[in-house]
Image (cartoon, rainbow, N blue to C red):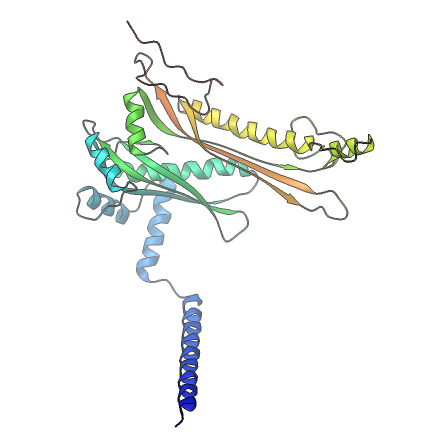
Length: 336
């Protein structure tokens, strides 16, 4: 057999093996994608969750796992790096393990209220897991929202590290903070006690209908998109830059409404607020039947709420991004 025929035969053999591999992967994918019946154990777990969640409780198998983790009979996970864990130990912080909180939520009439409720349901479940671990706080909390199968379904997911502080008994209502464990201790040293997470969210539509943006910035009576630019064009300023003031006012209204909700949530915790995360998005949808386009704006503000000990002077100045008093919090004067 010539060299050419040998190479050709090997190439055909490799191609045939590749086709077999693709066919095998395709068959495996169809097998995995095909619906299957749940096992008895999976059905029992689903039933346990269905019975526990309405009562703000956790299934027994979850409690058993958390108890074993607290006794160090099971491995535990921390979001801190090795260097951070060493610094935490020096400051009297003992990581207990990672805790989670989830809430699958279906929206109906109000996305603003739905986001508030969904996040707080997930927070309550995160705090419940931390309490079962014997924690004083949950630090380095991350918040994520994932789209569900339906257009109005969202999964609110929180993850953080439960920690115990040396010298403090286990808490039945652990504090929750988006800051790291080291920043948590720095706040405590300065007389600022993180007490929870405050959330503010607002969604609204800009629907062009009338000649002026209506009072209350709600749904109807909106000026047509670009009315201010059109006015400038009619005035002869054809090539001038022009702000779309209607959209600016609309987006400002959504932002201020979310901040107001953040303020109310912080007041519920009797705390000031450190705005730690802000998210804003403006989406455009084309109108039907020759109508002008409409816009949806959403703004979400999330912050670690902190309370200050009134009679304890701060050792360093803490400047929050947002204060309930609409001003920077000043460090109290040191006593002579």
